[in-house]
Image 1 (cartoon, rainbow, N blue to C red):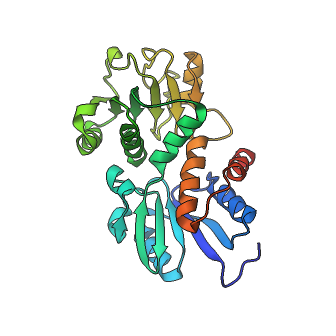
Image 2: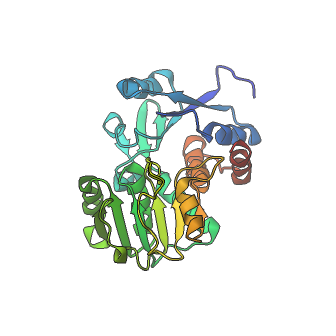
Image 3: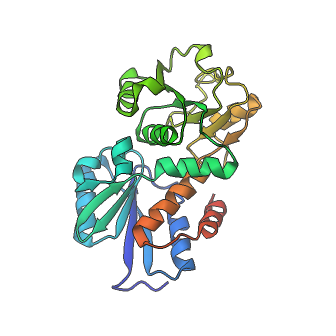
Length: 278
């Protein structure tokens, strides 16, 4: 494409940002549809977050994707929230409409889309989620909306996990600290989702948590990369199936693409760009 004064800019902010594959995915889609858009990543420190959001208005960016650790922190800086963001209390997509910034969350439904791609139907299933940040809340909200009946939420500190439980419906949750999860809490779980930023393998070589009670469950790590994550190495050790977060990245990206451009995304073009960039 040829960049001009008419080129529409979409950006990604986060900390860290160097690992991201989103620019390759979105720019490949723009090129495939001959759209005059450009997607650019920016490393933004916490001290500069408010200035970065103001720059979206000042520079006339068409939109913004938000990644770790700002999905919750950006909310007070926006003009309005879509129901998707209100439900999970986190924003990963911002659309700029003549200076009015609206926050959305495409993570949760992108996660569901990736499960369905794999052939996993979440309805009626029991699920365990490790972590209690913005991604965990988005995943939990989407799972509940898609018929999951029981969620076991595990986190280092109970406060954030309990906040998610109370916000989304405590009757569907059981909450445990990472240091004390009874084995029977995981019995019958069909899906285990790791949203923790910390490695799953401890410094002493052991695993962060014993998940062997969830025999046969799918292990899903929201992280992605060239090398298998330690969470998925553990899944392989238990002979459980495993998925990384590349599918979720693809499908949250296709939903964001629709919001930014109003066009149907070229899904296979975007998938190929992610696989090639992995």
